[in-house]
Image: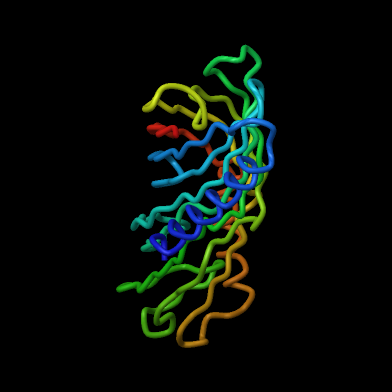
Length: 219
C-alpha cells in the first residue's frame, strides 16, 4: 500500500511542479525530498514560488507492531503511521530556515487485539477467557489534521543535494476507539467502560509530535 501511495504522490507532485514551471514567468525551482521520522518514511515533491515561499506535497508512512497494557489487559497492536500532506513553507530570512503550515489527510490508525489466557476484569466485571474469546478493535484519529512547525532546508531551492530537518505538531484530535468481543458475551456497558479507559490512556496523542530528517534533491 505504501509503495503504491509513493508512486501516486510522485506523479501528482511532478504534475503540480510542471504546471508552475510552464505557466510562470521564469523557470520554477523544483526538487524532491526523502525523509525518515515520527511519521515514518516519506517522499515529497516541491516547487519554489518566490524567494519567500514554496509548496510541498508528500506522502509519509510506516507500519510497526506496538503492544500496550490498559486496565490490566494486554493488547497487541499493529500501528499504521502517516498520510498525505500539502504544506506551505515561508522563509522569513530568505535562507534555509522556514516556518511551515499545512494540512494532512491523516491515515494514522492502530488495530488492537487481546486474547486473554486468564480471568480479566472488563468494566468492573470478571470474565473468563472462554467468555471473552478475543477482544479486537481499532484506534482512529481525525482524517484531516492541520500541521504547524519549523524546519531547515528548502526542498526546491539550493545546492544539488541538501539537508532537511522538521519539527512540529500535527493536530490529529482525540483517538476514537472501537472494541468488540468475538464471543458476544461481554456486555456492551463493560465494553464501553474499557473503551473509555483506552481513550483516556491515549489522550496525550491529540498532538502528534513530528520530527524528521532527510535529503533534498534539486533540479
